[in-house]
Image (cartoon, rainbow, N blue to C red; front, side):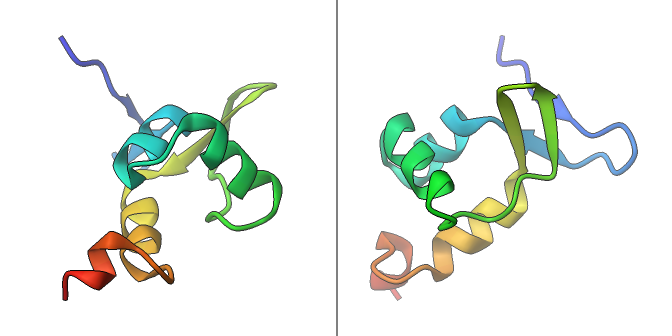
Length: 75
């Protein structure tokens, strides 16, 4: 089983830091550092006081376009 978080209003998949980091092939602390320094997309919601959530499609788009992205280097 692989549960996912989905926004009830839009049906969009939402990711925690862990899923964002896995998609970007970086560690969760590195994603946290990027977020703390304003280098990630803005979270769209909070799961609780300490758990921001990101729109999965927005993270995928950001990752593909960011400088030095492995996705961008493969083009």
